[in-house]
Image 1 (cartoon, one colour):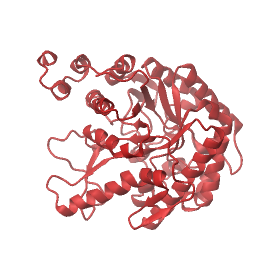
Image 2 (cartoon, rainbow, N blue to C red):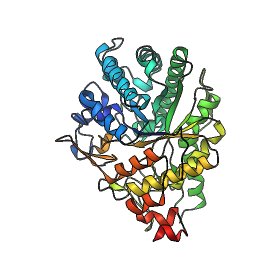
Image 3 (cartoon, rainbow, N blue to C red):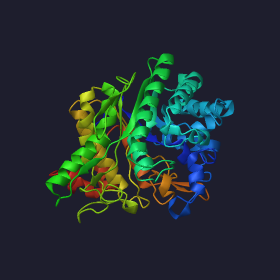
Image 4 (cartoon, one colour):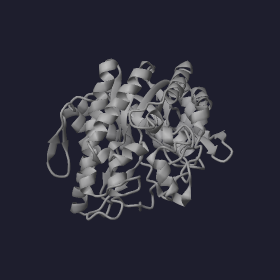
Length: 438
């Protein structure tokens, strides 16, 4: 199964999860307050602030030609209206190193983490955040924009709002549906402001968002009401944000709201895809079921079901927007690397199938390059192609990293790869191929 010669093969990271020492972020104080599973701490994470070049060199060795990374707002603007030239210089060095290694950077401005001073001012529950975010985006564009061909303004805005305002798993000062809607509306305003700030300076840059899109379905024994509820959740979670960037109107649980300067503010559709969830009505705590059928393949920590076909479904879901599509995150928590080789092969097969139908999927960024600090789950879940011991900072390539290197370097997935790395995938990906099955 062959991929186009201009396809982007990448991995993804985020600043707070790999840099370490981001003590001016709201997540740092959230950690100190004991909100992380098993009381884990990020400390130096993967030590990227001192030595990102080490892992980026591994990405290049892995055959990657792209990398998605984020910037930490709390480093760049440690106090209101005070920008740190040293921090900007460090990011410039990292981005230049990406280019030197042949890794095209895709840069995210906001990946779940806020400066403490912004929290004190109300952050996304106050419209003041829009002016601050626009100024932050403009500063980054002015100082680093010549090195950034692709931008993500906000990572997983709907997930961020749900985890912050509804479930309370992310740092928050307000909870409830009202706070959720207020936060989403201001996230939309921030995106629009940042989009225009970047495009004014670099009209040719591609600017969009990375949207977490999941399959929501009624359980096999679900009722008609469960199926109706799954459609409502999917419409709000998967469709409302990209539709708003297209039309300028955000359609929430009740009615719609039009935002100035929002329509047409997406140059591509970024899809973060991980799993399928079952939902019931009325919803349980946490909104989704954490039980799967006996045949389901479930990843570490009961994170979710491995459901590759859902990626193809999400690709089809954004086709009406007529934009290039990037799979900006896709991965599985799997410390033993038991599932990941097959996960890679089958999810890439879904992308190959989409490309075969001329769907405009132009790149894939695996989450993640190296094990990193997984937010409220700390170090309990390992998504990396490269295993990390956070105590010693020792790195070890997992078998899936070697598989991904073969894929990236050859622009193919083959039955021979499956035979060597994930033989259980042979009858799934090449059914009836008696030669492949021997």
